[in-house]
Length: 408
Image 1: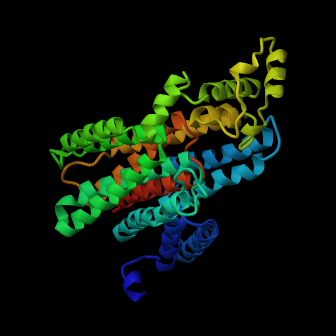
Image 2: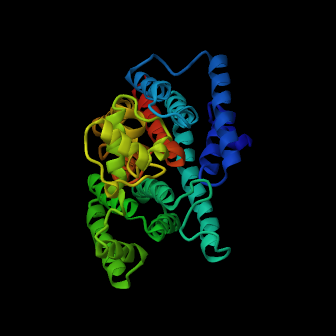
Image 3: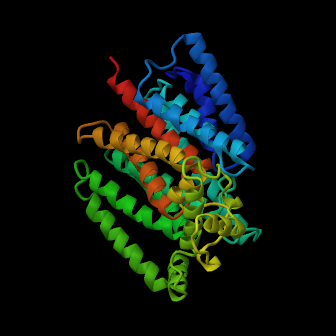
């Protein structure tokens, strides 16, 4: 413990943050306790130090507006059931982003967070596989605390980008054994992502790998060539072997249903947004958009109704359509502002060849979270619960690193 605490500004606080990172894909209760402990210890430490992370800036305003938009939506939601409780999810990951960004952590803490997030994903996978092949309690690969297979796939895609960024950043500094372990870790995450057969997450992960390899060209000349070669070989093998994700795509194509009825779900979302354009139906109230309500809303608008064009669903199967339907323009504008600032920070502070391995790692991790959240979010409801927490942790440590780098 003394060795762990040496060189850490806030050892107990760091331990709670690492506990959250470790339990995130594993178990609900420890994850929730670690999250609460982190917030309480962070506040206690900053009150005692009389240092809350410096002056107020644009990011503080963005995060506050993002969190506040959820409560504004709940107050003026068109439908009423789960909107207030669901808003707490936005508060949770918004507050986490806020505190990590103002944490004032050092390089050791950043490395520990990245390493713990990778380790926790690797630890979570054996249990997920056991539920498929041993207990037969699940049909698809699902990490215990992440849940539904598409959500697990989104989580794994972000972890894959983070891990690949670390491997490429530190490759020249590692010995042969370290490189071998790194390849095995990244390979395990990649194979598990393919096992999920989530077409959206796998597709955006392929794009992400190529994007990261292209970005690393100033440091690794052959990174892009290697990524393209591996991608072509993997795609060719998947097609010849007819693995699950390929069979799934072919089946949906034969049924002329490539989007798996998402277009009908999105049509329902658009009708709900048109009915409540400013604040939506309320967070987590997407399931209340029934065919009866859609018919009523269409009739009230003087428009025809065809039940075959709509499909009720618990959520919108799209970050865009789900946000528009549940939070209206108010919530959607807040989300777009955060995503735009996130991307702008990545573009503006893109590392140069001579920058540190850690900077490249943190930049790649934050980029991975953005690309997967937005890319996979086109066809899946991303950026909520566990993968939202994962995303804001990676964004938070990147922003905190930049704050420390710019300080005297």
